[in-house]
Length: 119
Image (cartoon, rainbow, N blue to C red):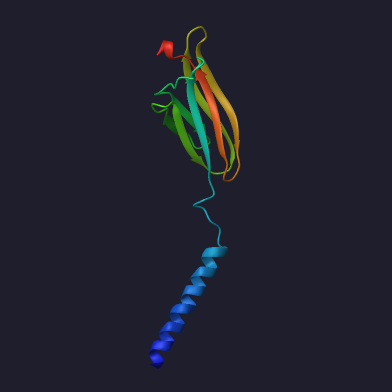
């Protein structure tokens, strides 16, 4: 019976020890924010433009817009640039180099316009 009490005591102490450090340590898992980049047509319906390469720097994170014209980036708080080359009749291309500041637990949306008719 005495060994059982000692075992329970040791397990309890270990639980308290690990609970303390897991609550006071810095978390990295949730220290991010979302950046949603929509690539859309200049029309009134804002029709999505799929397949556009979007680059976020620093980090050179590259994604292509999906069928909804969306690229989703999970980033640490800080200052970034969003770069993209989107086709458009007339000027030929819109070259985007948009500054973005992301705060902790923030979800930010950026719309990049182009022309579906030139794709």
